[in-house]
Image (cartoon, rainbow over all chains, first blue to last red; front, side, top):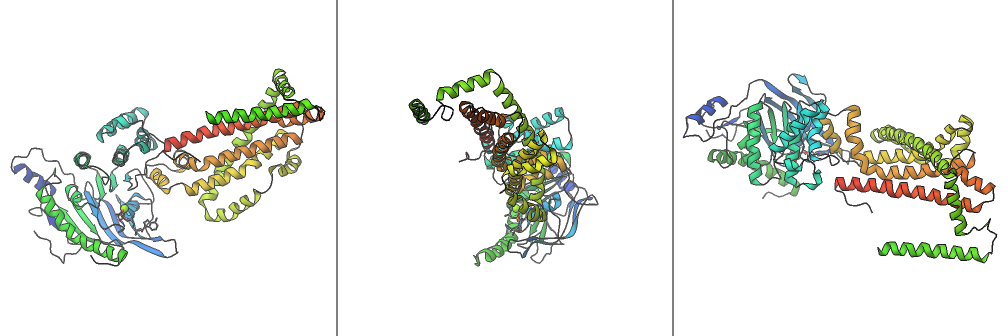
Length: 308
Length: 253
Ligand SMILES: Nc1ncnc2c1ncn2[C@@H]1O[C@H](COP(=O)(O)OP(=O)(O)OP(=O)(O)O)[C@@H](O)[C@H]1O
Ligand SMILES: [Mg+2]
């Protein structure tokens, strides 16, 4: 079905042949032309894991005025859902993740996780920062260990998980290196391992694959999808790459340019595992990109005063 | 190597001129000692253990005094660095107190504690506390915010956050302040020891004066410089170098 241009945020657009449930589309994959991989179980349930109620946040700027970064966002992330957020640069995507992580307090509204109001940080929600925030005084292995240590895991457990997660991101050789000795993409993978190792219910990822080469990124897409399917973790994934969003997400939420609001939602019911190059993925991405482009143009107009 | 050669030549020339002047006997030796007289005094001092004892006593006081002021300075500096009100009030007071030479605290210390170890510790602490506090406050402000956020995000809070994240994250920014604090503490200690009788290097210096033994005075001065140099130049510099290497920062200028 083609999304109609006057759709509002409350009426999500559906990709896939019908408004199928996740399971139905998985079955469809099975009946399709000889799948080479078994379909992944899709662990989405209807119970909300994270709900944002009327969230707004304004920053104090240096000249004393306030900048409204995100404005009145209502959003529910279901337990086990893989939710992707796309939007133009500066629309408040990172801000939103910080709010869910409990690093910022909203100016108004509140964040609920499992019906509890978020008052601060908690190891049930781990954020992979856009700037990564790896600790330069710790080795790669110690960085991965950090969250587990804070959680009070035993030394043996920690060692085992360090080994497991470093192997997962293909960095076993670099356990004893320092972050500054790694490339940008390798650092992103360390940050991913550090977050995964704490095994949170909710994984918040802020453009985690932006600096990776295509091969590594594809590999990590597969791994992330597999981990998500196996563990039933809830993931909120911010990216500027619409194709990546469609490749990974059950749902893609498009934000407006500043102040960030939910412009539109897209339900992606394509069968899993997906491939970045798939025709269906490309088609859905094109659709979303058109809407995103409107917002990017708005942002360019504000930043440069032009309409390209 | 060239650098070392130049240093050797410079110091050889310096000692040569000194020896020459001493040889000319313009001044009596108790006013202007010979280099070999000073060497003799150094050897004698170590041989009869008086130097070792003095070094031991002075270093013990340093460790205690400096340790106290680092611990206190961290708490104070973090408090001042993270609170606007404290920064404007206490922060301002600390900066203005910094212009007071630490030895000025001695009369007060003697009145409070008498001629005791405590009085001298007090002077050492007051001598270095301010620079440690200011360094800490500065480090806290210059440290990138992301580390604190990442630490909280990964479940560190309270003391664990301070110990495992905030402290190591601010170390490159406070190490020079810690070094300066050490230098101030060292100076305060020697001046304190010179003024009231107690064991220690400062007292040894005054004893040399009382005995009209200029060789011993110079020998002790050399000792004080050497210890200051070893701690500052070797201990702090190498810690700083290791830190910067680990972080991948450019070497300090
Ligand atoms: N600490 C801050 N103080 C003041 N303004 C801020 C701060 N952090 C973010 N902003 C502003 O809030 C807006 C949203 O920022 P945010 O980092 O959430 O954007 P984003 O969507 O993640 O952008 P990008 O895709 O470029 O990462 C931006 O306009 C930014 O200028
Ligand atoms: Mg961002």
